[in-house]
Image (cartoon, helix red, strand yellow):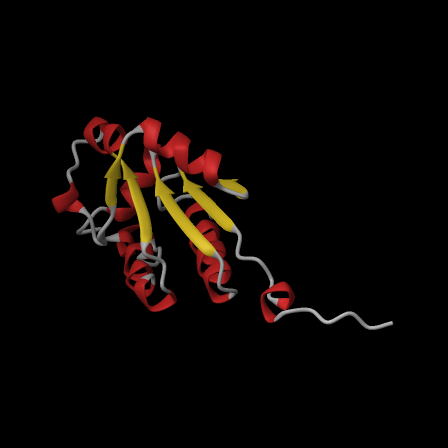
Length: 131
């Protein structure tokens, strides 16, 4: 016997995915891998939180010149975030302060937040990726 299902029951449920980027932009592939994961999740219509903390805040710093170390400019790729509707971008205020940065130094618009707010985002998430 076939049971009737409403449309909402047939729709996959959106997950809340939080990506925490903690590594500096160059010297390893963590930063690029995290960005690729964020964009991939957004393509599949998941709710994405993108958090930068520790040395990860350096990924967002204006004026990077990675050509000097024969690397591509990762910060230029962040301009794609709005195109993928990644609007929940957060930056840890303590990490910025520890590195002499402010929101004016950032290449993208990011919401400054505290460690407590980040912990709250993590608790509300279905999945957390910590790179």
